Length: 334
Image 1 (tube, rainbow, N blue to C red):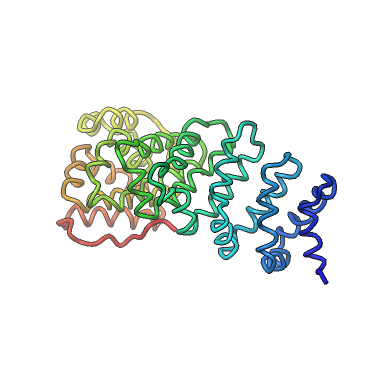
Image 2 (image 1 turned 45 degrees about the vertical axis):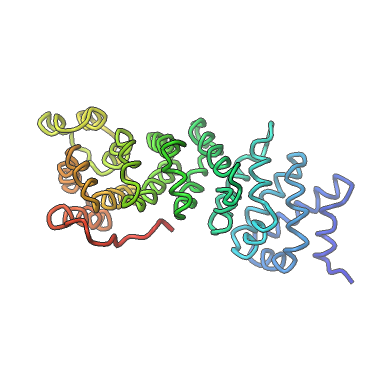
């Protein structure tokens, strides 16, 4: 005999809209608690397909279905099943369907699914030579086009951090023909801290390729150095003597009063990215050429957070003693 939960799951495929709506609302409610998530995870094979199908229906059914899937996808085992059943493709197709009313939830679902290696491969479209990179290009375009407050595409920053943990993702973002990282970096000026964190985490992860891809990083230095150095420049107004040795995009920003970056996570990520670049001799030369050491010296004077101070000191030690041969002690963003 079917259990109560199996009967409930059956109703997700009911022909009657009110019955289907009632069932999906109950399932969404269950995913909001540990016990409910645990119970539903035992029926993953029969609950995930109907929830996935409901995503393409009207908002009153698709929204609770999407919320349920976002909650369920926090469980790695269930997220793995979702990736296997092609939910990355489903989410991407629906995200760009005209009039989509569950954009934010679909993006959040992709954030969870790209915590997994297989989810990243699906989003990068690895193995599909003709289409490889199309999903990422679409997401970057949406991330860079949208800028309203509390934007549903803000969470794309977290997806970019996830995919840049993998070498294939970093290579795609750094490919100068695609020009994706240049577009992403320009979002660092956003007032959204979620967006800023996404950008700084992505840049920092991409800098793990500095040994082999330094040239591609330095190709976008007019955007890269301000994104990395302004958060850690302190809040003093710099003298003309200092700014005259900097490129215009840095010097002009540091000649005026500015809002300091108060988020230590962003500051640490910026400093770790600089460290990874300056491990390379050509990276150190580029850093000196923008008067980077002076900026770090001034920024360090105002810093009080111990983790941020440690990240400054790591670069300082490298610039004073390093030949650039030592291994980085950091690991790709978790």
